Image (cartoon, one colour):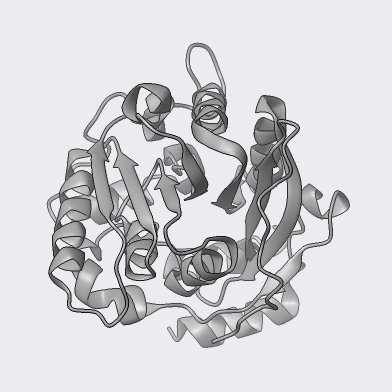
Amino acid sequence: MNIRLAMTNLNSNLREFRSELENLMEAEELDYPAVPVFGPYRPYLKHAIAHPAKANIYLIEFLVRNYTSPGDLILDPTAGTGSTCVVSALHGRDAICIDIEPKFYEWMEKAREKVEKAKTLAPKGRMITILGDARKLTELLKSKTDIIITSPPYGIFSHGEYPTKRLAEVGIKYPSNPGNIDNRPYEGEGETYITAMIRVYSGMFKVLKPGGLAIVIVKPFIRNKKVVDLPYITWRLLDNVGFKLIKLYKLRLHIMNFWRVLYYKKFPDVPLIAHEYVIVCAKNDGVEARSISPNTVQNK
């Protein structure tokens, strides 16, 4: 099946999902192509191609260029492949990437080594990799960070068994750490995804410098034939710990896996998830938020 053609046909027949976030603030649409194997950053990250939820590298590049400055310290507390930190370091920013999974930490270390060996015309930033729990940021970090760019972990509750199976196919057990947030149910007794992420976002608030920014990339998901508005839920959690919303983007998605195409054909009444959202918020601590670039959207 031609996935792109199938998506085009689906897009013309299905109602697109719209997050409740857009009732709070108009979302500026970004439109970058799907990036095969990390695009121009492939030499630094190709070893991590098996990761099931790779960020759009052009989106990361846009955020780094428009919301940070050379010399800034950028944090990604749930870093996965470490792509945010690779882009940051190659643009002259220092970056800290944290992940609880030993395999992902191994990938981040490989990326760091490649960045350090790379010969570049412009000065590079430093990459610091940490094997650790994002719920314990105040224990892991000794200094404050200027900005956070991250995407929350997507557990089995949001992706079914797809990430686990995909990694298993290449010999990787995931999640291997029983403390991984991906092991937590969306709701129920004990620690859930929601309560775990409150701890992460609270820690993010504490480790940011006064007026610092947190940028969270998050996508809705389907459960029981209904779209769960994870972007709006995420904003409610960020708001709860003291952040204020200053900018909202939505990135158009240009590709989906084969099984998702079949799902929409079988259940055409389910709204189409056509975007992932980018929530830009500032630390609401009485200090003026750091200035942001006035640049317009940069399409590739």
